[in-house]
Image 1 (cartoon, helix red, strand yellow):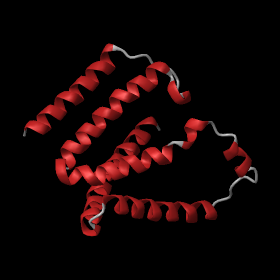
Image 2: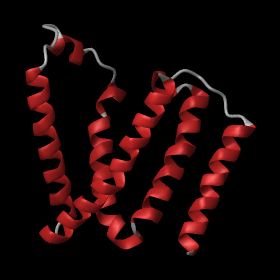
Image 3: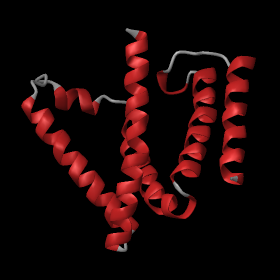
Length: 147
């Protein structure tokens, strides 16, 4: 099951440069990266709304939402910054360099989150193997940027 989930998230990761490329195209067509990001969230939010309405949700959903910790609410804001930034930067840096840097940033901060158990994530201390993995990604960023 673990390998299936790993393949699934790998395939989901493949969607990110596709999304970035089509959003960047929309941003250049509209001549407004932030408007393209807004369209992205409207389309995605609409789809999620229909899916959620089609699913059975617990009756206490509103109460549960009110009890969520503060940090649980910042995901949407982070998503807006992320999507807007990608729409702006992919046409300027290219998809490969943009995503190499995104993956590097994700891994570096993921190590911090794991090491300190931030946001309720189980603690997984930084070790040499994980550090070498991030350094290899960083080396990949330099190679992609050079060529």
